[in-house]
Image (tube, rainbow, N blue to C red; front, side, top):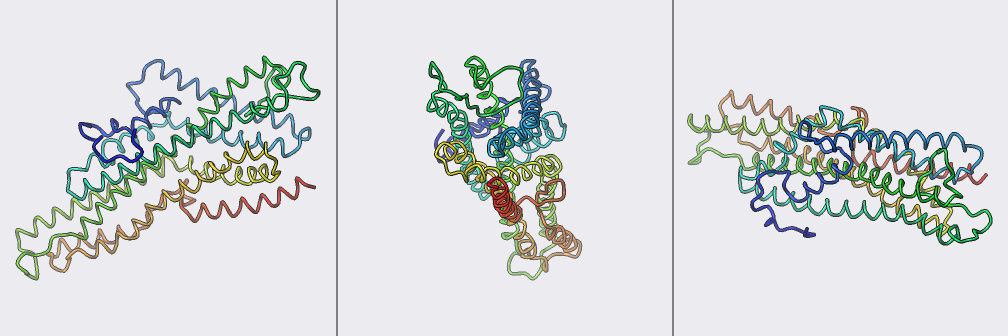
Length: 415
């Protein structure tokens, strides 16, 4: 795949799902059994889906039990790592559960067959131009997020292995009090901190669990971002259509009877286009609202814990938590800015509606413009459970609160 495509790779494509970046999204979601293909799933995919969901639920429960059994025995700095992984597991389980919801299947089907700009590219030259622009953005963003995900998995899994080598945990004889370090800890009925066999078993399992959890976070973020990019493209097409609305021919002060019929039909088409955007945005809020609420709560908690871990300023700690901190904060900022695009474009819509030559239209068409203008003035934001707007203001509040909690936890942990 090219880093920056030129649009030539779209030649011969018949469906949006066959575009390269969409194929990469489909591959990532199939890896964790969450690609919405109900009715066409093989038995293997169904079994895989259930297995991954049960596995993630099991690791979440055993992670919580590990915390329960070790509170008061281990320091808060050591337990902080498990707090982070448990919260990441919560996010993973919440997103894996989407595949069992009918509205998730409906939403993705609407996106691929109606909202994706591939289905609108032939409406006008500007629609084709916008489609190519969004295609390039989506292509680059897909590559960037997948590279970040793979890099995060490697660093998160390789760091404890490197620390074990440096501490001499693999030596024979092993240094006194040397134990095996892991990426994730659980309450399990076998020894995996001093037994080499137990270490190998858990390390292998953690590689797979870490990959699944990373896919749950990054690939779903990617899918959401792609949906927003295409909605942004729809807004650009809609606004351009309104700003270049036909005017009366021959310098007349009003449309002729024949022109009025065409103008009325064009205005109805534009309103249907806007309704498509509104309906899809509403479905996104209802489908992903509780997922986004949990995601913001996760960043609120994990942000201060990661800062607390990095505050030790030890090379091993920075190597382990530094990349994870950067990636998670980057994910928060990235998803918030992407969703802010919708609100920004929606703010431009009322002026575009008012710019149409409504004064030249007959009365019934003017009434239609008035209804459109009222509808366009309603704020358009994705909300988490209809409570929290997903955007830069919420993101800034989370970052500010995370720093405040970090200072408080740092004081408590030091004392």
